[in-house]
Length: 285
Image 1 (cartoon, rainbow, N blue to C red):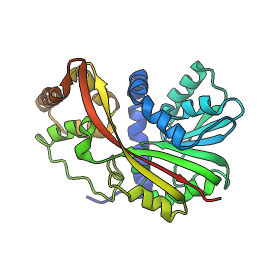
Image 2: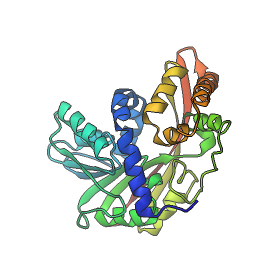
Image 3: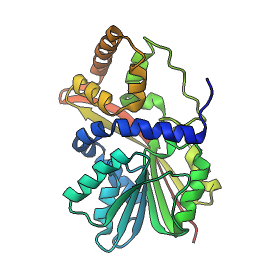
Image 4: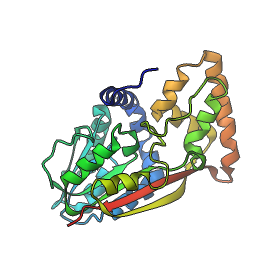
């Protein structure tokens, strides 16, 4: 199979995320509640405070951009970019409902940021950079648009074996179809899972004071059925695999996924482990 060019991959990503935008908006409140700790951690690591101008990469339906806007206040501003216009439409609706006039959203590619140098006081990114075809190029772009002394804070997924929330459906699907192991050098969920990978790229791009931490947590669901429903609404990569199954295989796969999730049941519901790699770095003065 011929590898996609960076341009082709970006276009494929745009189509995938636009397709699942409705699902992300449907589950928005649930995942905001489940992942709020990550948003607050990103805001803290970026050293956000009143009056700063912030760039959020891969904003999707608005987080952590909306929290950043609340943090910097009316004297500051936040600009969120994402490939998928439909995701950003949801983000704009949320900003309007929250009466936030200091945040805006536009489509854009992280590797070619359309901004002048030293335009932003801080940059945040939640689950975006591992999908970028040319991460070192993106790191250089981030450094370029940051003001001297400004901070980048980023969250990417850590090791697959620590992320049952993500890997359980893949394990089941492998029972029905061939799912090649991910290329560690290609864009994907676990592209930056290895300790030190993103930190080195940031160091090579000129950042200093790079700090990395693996952050362990859980995503909770009332039931395995609700987990499966959310998966099929928002997980574009899983959707792409499910279309390869027959009708009976889809039904069997669903039952096996729900059954597999049972091992994580507690008295108050399902608690699925996640591991996130948090990386923060500063542009030298």
